[in-house]
Image 1: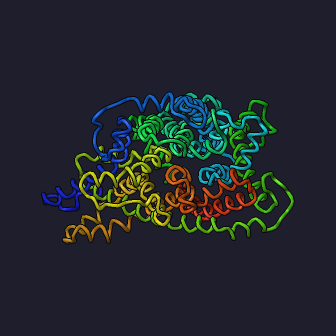
Image 2: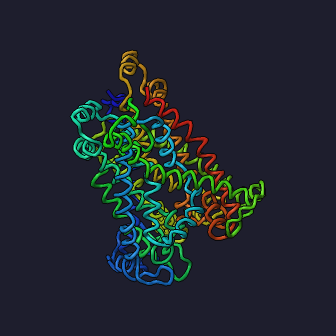
Image 3: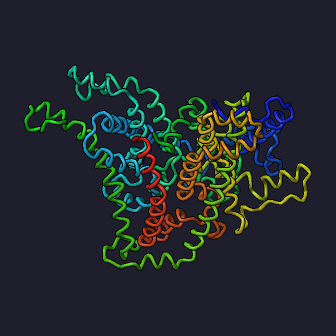
Length: 291
Length: 299
């Protein structure tokens, strides 16, 4: 039973007030997104006239076209599309590899335990929580030594390394509640390490695979600190390009183009959230409350 | 795992070592890129390093330079103000929304989706949106004027004393939905017996919440505070996108301080010291938390 339904269920006035408060909060939460969207469809003159809440009286796609293809970021005037594809190039391998490693780690740490497995898990888990400032300087040097500084490949490596903690946590907690008897029975039947993993555990892991992919996708796509520290110019991800576009001090500020660019950066994670919000929330929750 | 591996055939020995072999790449990566790097950065904070690493021991020179830095003082002050307001507001608002949503609301799913979506956005997107929203010339202020409220004035974004609060507003907007979801899950897990008993006794709803329900949410409070504190100390993106640490240094925080000393001012020593300090604070917060969480799941 839930704690709900305590506040006067039959009192219509209280109910109305309740819905009103919730609606006001909903409007407050939607407001920034709404303002971003309408601003991105307005010509600049209309923005200078005031009222950012008004719908565009003269709808235009020009800001979106400019943001995508011709806005100036630094000295390059070709919009954010190149950076958008950089982010995709970073996200796809980073998510797949860190996810696979996490799945194996979770499997070993629950079904093939060895002495010290708790310490190993603790050490991996703590890496989720370090402030990444502590690794920025040495990472910059290592990327330089490996000749992958200022490249999307470098960022893939960075995101794999610092993604392992969360992916391992997700799979470990999931496999923890997977029945040991099934694994033991398979072992008695002579099934090996990989057979058990691919035939028995993996087919049952779809939910946690979805959670992990969504979590990693959102994290890597939204990353700014690593992007801004280890890349510049052509190889930067979308978040860095967006910040450079918005906060460059030269010229007249084209707010409509900025908002369109921000929407371009936001759309992939928003789509994932709308399609699979349940799994997104599950990832958030297991990232904070374990077990 | 009881038999010593030497008494078995090669295949069995492989099966014995295979799990550890599969785990080892990740473990080695973590050891090197996390713990190796922590040691390296810590050492650098006690060295003479400036633009390049210089491994000569300098004792606490960089640390005293850090502590006498004016900007670091501002950064520490800001993270206190920001962190405290962020944690308190998010927790209070998240709890309130969770309680309101827990009253058999018809559109609960939709409302939850609306409250939580900012969490899916990049801080850079959030910062860009709010910077525009609160823009003194054209944003909220101008809109209020055009709606007829001529005397409305809101210029916190460019006011050195107030700018940090605009970051708090945006950060609260982004994270409250998440905290709400945590509390909602907590509320749904509460045992109903005591509540029923109190209802039969005729206790008013607010009293039931204050005396019975909220005390039972203690673990959720703890998780929420740890998560928020951790997010606050790491906050970097939002400040860069919204205020760039300005006006002047007014919204500098440890994370932006570290970045600027590492990459613009080429002071590796001081930058490392500030990073070690951040790690120490987070470790003091997270390690006991993780320890107790792992302990609980054991029993």
